[in-house]
Image (cartoon, rainbow, N blue to C red; front, side, top):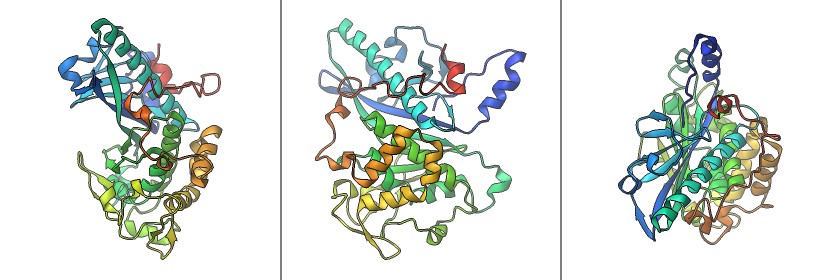
Length: 353
């Protein structure tokens, strides 16, 4: 998640400090690079993002650079990673974050188009993953022994995966992750080559995470006091890349990513037998007031339609969409939220010049 660059000068010190204290959402997307049909490491081919981006970029930190769109780009162990700036959490924040991410993706794609023309080659961006970051700002004196960010991550691993599967995953997906990152919670999923579904995913995540943060305890036993369905036999595993938890396909009695999301019935811990879509729908319904609080009207309708089967999930398809293999060309951004409809966030207005 790209960090806000503070403006210098005493006249801005107070207001900027106040702004960066706001709860925020941020998104990141990782892409494999395919050159003439062969996957390569971007750091081996380009060396630095400065070799791709023609405009002068401000160095951010480490190997990352600010993009003119307000986000950031860097190479991360064999992939190109694009990140949004932090965006304050309020109504429409997920749509703003999704718009920012896709604008950054298309900007990088545009620069790669110029690079491939100059080098007489073909460069594809293949979707790899999307990370959704939500602030965790509960003061330490309110955390005690039952409300730590680590406990929150474990609890969310029992709530988030199924609705996220319906909105973000595809037939080749392998898991949904939840990572505690100190002052934020990070949810990891496959890249979603459909901008409205990606924004819907972010909206559901921010609504659920922000509400669960308010619960008086993050102990897993609190789920017994709710109507939230949990698949019987589900056992999350430690995350494979960082601290945290992973709802991988083999953490379930059967692989949910290849199941019939309407036909197959899953036993739940409260004795019910429900389809994957029904489980996702019930979890979404439980948190609906909080999802609605942060959603734009278009995305709210889309979430409801997917959960009710009136709009397709990528898990309704036989295979992963082709757009996954060539992001920015086979799947793109249609400017669903122009600025006149959804103005830029405070943080974006600081970064975009």
